[in-house]
Length: 318
Length: 287
Image 1 (cartoon, one colour):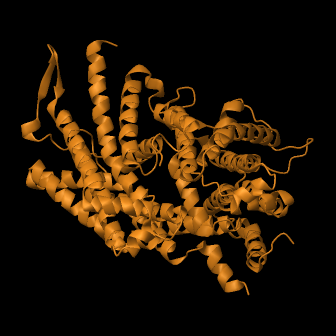
Image 2 (image 1 turned 60 degrees about the horizontal axis):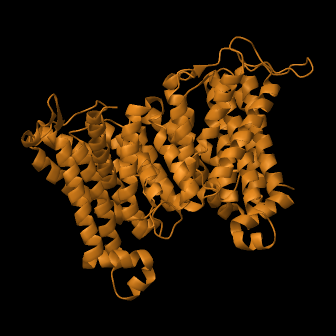
């Protein structure tokens, strides 16, 4: 069983069971289906960040770089008025993002601790300003995606990305796969060594493992999945702009993953849904929702020391 | 670039660098002494600017407004430390990041509620209005030179306090060994409150000084915060000397880049920071 904790075994199936039926309940209200799709996509992004921060111990404040890259790479690579194949382009975008993560990772992983936080922030800010000031990529307005990709495999097509419900299931399927993927990775031999590099880097190194290589591999994995989430988000809304890679995006994702319970992987879903839910609630309550959002975050740091997942685990584990 | 333009940019760069130092010094002081990563530091800069604007429109006097705003900022610092920051001393950096991001939200929202979202400007105080003739047909604003001098003066006072006074001795001791200082009977709690409040006041004073030179807009805190992080990281986290050198470098580089390579002017300081960290991963003046 890849879900070791009782809390996971209860929460994860419950979440996906409910999520499977969401579009059916909200059929008449496509706005909500779209909204939940966005939150699911964001959960993938937050989950990939949670893997890096909570499991590998790489506290990055520049994860939004890859979220933005996912969208921008699609716009840059695909022809403007021709539908391309979704699977082929997913492969392209993930490979190129992985390559970029490999190069930037080799640079940023030379530093540790607070310096790692800052250098990741610097690299993402650099790219933010690159796209913000660029003429060919639409500057601060960003760019539109006029044609959504088609999804046929060997001539068979099950998904129509223009249909919000189909898109919803694609996002949900991706989230499920990401969760299972991370769980499998973490349970493997590779994952246990990663755990060791976080717990005691010196001893792990003394045992003959190349810590740098393990961290770099994880950085590439997390970043690539972050880019995939950004790609999905860009497809859902049909545009990209520099705000995708702004540091606020990284900061918010970090807040979501800490809120959910750092290092738990499934907590990313809890954190993202709670944050977005609170924001939606406060926005409808008052124009000054930010005041309440900020206060809620402060309160949660003080009260929930291990995030929502930590609190639930305290209730459910024996 | 003509010689004249070069010197104007040089002075501009130094002046911007000194202002950056003033903001960054509070950030690095609080981090160095207390180990607190305060992402809301930029919000304190914003608080200073908005307060001085508000009091200047009410009282009409820049000096009175500046003093009032600085006192309010100091009290605000004490309040925040007592109510929130104190709970963070035994927590990790991530909890600090989370809580201070929450604070950014609260301050941005309060700014919008209290003062609205229009950009504002503060008039240059009468006595400092005008310019110093530079060449036959150009002059340099007196206020900018005054601002630079104030920054130098505060840097001097800060240096004196940290290296020569009893408070400074405690601050330095607290940096190296918290338990030992505590064991010697020093009230570390009040020491931390003082340091944090000074940090907040330094940021707010920078906002006050910057107010007549820059427009006061929502979100001004975040952009200055990120630049300050670049400064502090280049210099070495926690080092006041490093912040000083880092701030001057960043000030000069970004000012000259704006003239020489406009297309890269926003990116250049980040590129510089990455280069510095590649050579010295702990910053230039790491301890």
